[in-house]
Structures are given as C-alpha cells and as structure tokens.
Image 1 (cartoon, protein in one colour):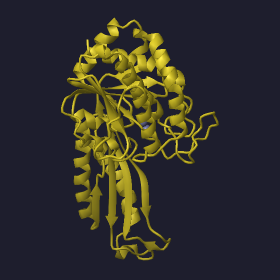
Image 2 (cartoon, rainbow, N blue to C red):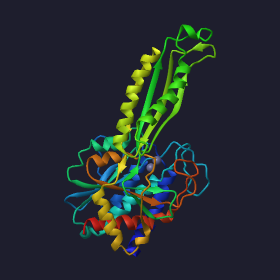
Image 3 (cartoon, helix red, strand yellow):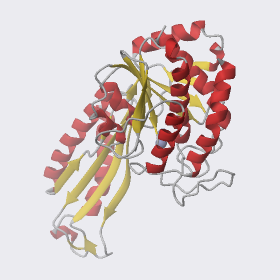
Image 4 (cartoon, rainbow, N blue to C red):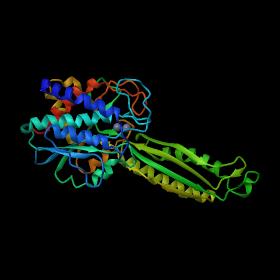
Length: 380
Ligand SMILES: [Zn+2]
Ligand SMILES: [Zn+2]
C-alpha cells in the first residue's frame, strides 16, 4: 500500500499547494469546489453538488451502509504573514486552520478506494463541507441535505500543531469543546454623569455583572466539570459625561459535556432575570449559536483500540485523555451517526488561526495511510 499511496500523495501535493494559494472564506469556496470536482473527475469519480449550498459537495465510492468522512474546505479571514513559495495569493485570507490538508485527506481516501473498491464492504462518502469556521457553521446546512439515510459512521480529521507530522491522535471521550455564543444587551434609562443617583449607572452595573455572573456560574457548577465562561466584547457609551441607555456584551461558554453547557445556559438565564429585577433594568439574553461538543463514540473507540493493537505501525497512533477547548461543527454530524474525530499531527510552526501557521507537508502520507487503514478495518 505504501508505494501506491506515496504515488497518490505525490500527485495530490501540487493540488494541495494550489489550494493553499487560493484560500476562500466560508460559503465562497467556488474555485476550491472546482478544483475538487476536477481532481475527482480525472480519477473517475464525481462530486455531487449539495441541493441547498452553492459550494462543496459529496462523493461516493462503493455501496451499502455508509461510512462518511468530513473534509472541511474553507479558509479564515487572516493575512498570511510568512513568506514561502505557496503563500496565499489573496490579501487577508489564509488556510490558517489546515483545511487545505483536510481536502487532500478526503481526495486521497477517495482515490485509494476507487482503485480498491473491493476493500470496501460498505459505501464510503466524503463530504466536502463549506464554512466550518462560520457561526453556526456549514455543518448545520449539510445536515439538512438528503444524504444521511444510510450513514452508519461519521469520521473527520483535523491537523494538530503540537504533534509530529502524521502522528494520529484520538481523544478518549470528548475531542472538542462545545461552544455557545452569548449575546447580552442591557437597557437602562440613561442620564447625565453628574446625577447617577437619579438614574441607573449602566456601565457600572454591567461591569459588576461581568464579575458577579461569572462567580455565580462558577459556584453553581460541579467543580469537577471543566468549562470556560468569558466575555470577549463590550460596547457601550459615546461620551465621557453621558450615562448610556444601552450596553452590550458578547462572550462564549465552552464545555466538554453538553449537559454542563445546558446547565450554564439555564443558570445565566435565571441570573439575568434576578439581576434585571435588582437593578430595575432590562436585559436581553440570546444564544445565537450553540455548537455541541465533539464526543467520540465509545464503541468506535473500542474498535479503534483493537485496530491499533493489530497495526504494524501502532506507534503512529495515540489515544489521549485531554480534549481541546476549540470547537468543530463536526459535532452536528454526530446527531446523525456515531463517529470519531481524528487529529493528525502537523509538526506546524506557528499556531492554528494565526498568520504564521505552517504545517509540514510530510503529514500527508502517514496521515492518509492511517485513515485509509482504519476505514479498511471498519470494512473488514
Ligand atoms: Zn479553525
Ligand atoms: Zn479547522
């Protein structure tokens, strides 16, 4: 397999580099979709378009019950600030999360199983998903597509800076945190800063809310449950001597357990009711997006452990117990079928989501080999 796969990867490398040069933001991955479709067509495969999305698509090999593999295809609104031969040609847009590699994973897997369709007892479907970085995320749109009937397992792979290129890492239970966006708007009567006693000093009240709400949440959640409750944006006021009528906050809740997320959401709802009564103000609370945690299925984890035990390169596979605090909308697919979320070591310099992110291309061969072997194992 190694030599054949080496050949497939060497043919794919120029395409992966081209994808890095032409990054496209979520829902605008038109050129990317054309490149994917062309590669598939050259190899006797067909990219099926989505009905409700203009970019991305899916491609099938084999038939029967389906193992689906998600490749996300969008880039980020980040300026690539390193100089290398395949630097992004688009100002302010960059594949800073490695999705150019994720496309290559999907294509390599399809190409391999097109040649070896006889290794598949079941069907294989690669979903090229737009807009993973958007909120609520392209997965929510893909979920509405009529492509899920026979899907029995869902897989995805994401490059991971911290590990050597091609190292395959799975989290024992939770792979990625849930991410809930909080939007809060506080409304008060407003007034002159010379007379705070005649109105509600809204900025002061909101400042107190930030720390008190956080204390309240922290003291009402089981201390053994990890979570993040942080505000990232505050807006209010337009003059030094005017007490504003409106102040807004935006923040995030992240948890490793969807029930903990639910608990924090209801705590915050109750706290806002009590707080608005105490201060005689109005508070509008919204959660515009709630991306669940990515939780690896325990049965599939057992299968994965058995797979490692019989694999010649067992040392390339790792199971870790620490999840990542980042989120991935792959979690929505897990509502359709049990799944696993692979991380592929990228030996990267620079962090993901930064302009200096640079993954080591050598991750492709071992990364794709591991994925293909596991899919073969599922089809044994
Ligand atoms: Zn990302
Ligand atoms: Zn990503």
